[in-house]
Image 1 (cartoon, rainbow, N blue to C red):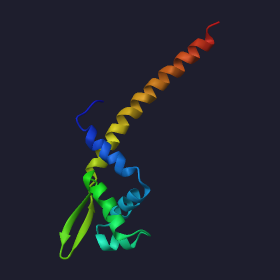
Image 2: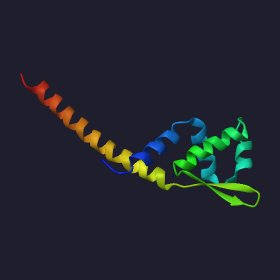
Image 3: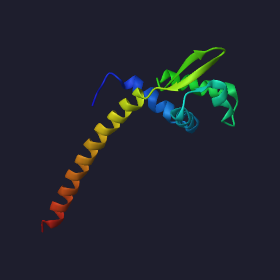
Image 4: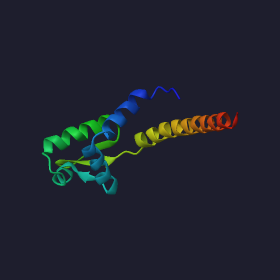
Length: 112
């Protein structure tokens, strides 16, 4: 499956590679939150949270929307769905290849 979405997938998988960013996404999946409220739920500095949010935003996983004097963070699921589709394609490909390999091994073992 070769697509023109490789840079987007790279950004999504790169963003998801960090446990703090995954925790941020999990927290935001429950409800949109202002940056300050989100930052208070983690044992790291607010600037560190902002850097993580920058990465998530570049990957398209989070959007910050101005709300008065703060920004509301909202999860955007489309990039995750695209990554899931990519993974599903390769899962079915490799399952089929492994099934064919197992059949070949079984056939070879039965041949004297």
